[in-house]
Length: 119
Image 1 (cartoon, helix red, strand yellow):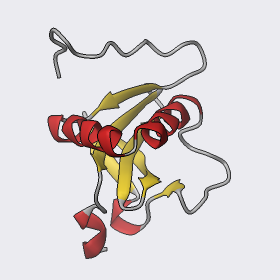
Image 2 (cartoon, rainbow, N blue to C red):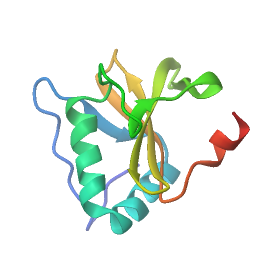
Image 3 (spheres, rainbow, N blue to C red):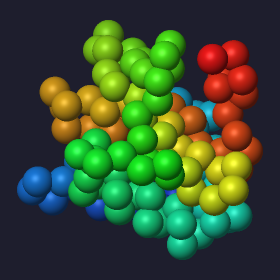
């Protein structure tokens, strides 16, 4: 995704923090929709992604996905896949790429992801 005029400038991750990037255009668009619906909660989720994306103690609102959704692949790397419940049905799914220190957002949206209906 290439930035253009009028786009927000995301700051680079400071030392000890994770980069947060979109895996594709659909996740970027979903993020914008989620931010419009739940601005403060989306910001809190972004902060969590930057500072503690793979918590030692999982919660019902922030946990690793299970079964066939527990892992995903991005750019040839298989990574753990996690979820943050932002608000109601709003979710963020991301791959925890420990080798690159990056969270790749694979889904962001205001509704519950359909992929969980199959698992």
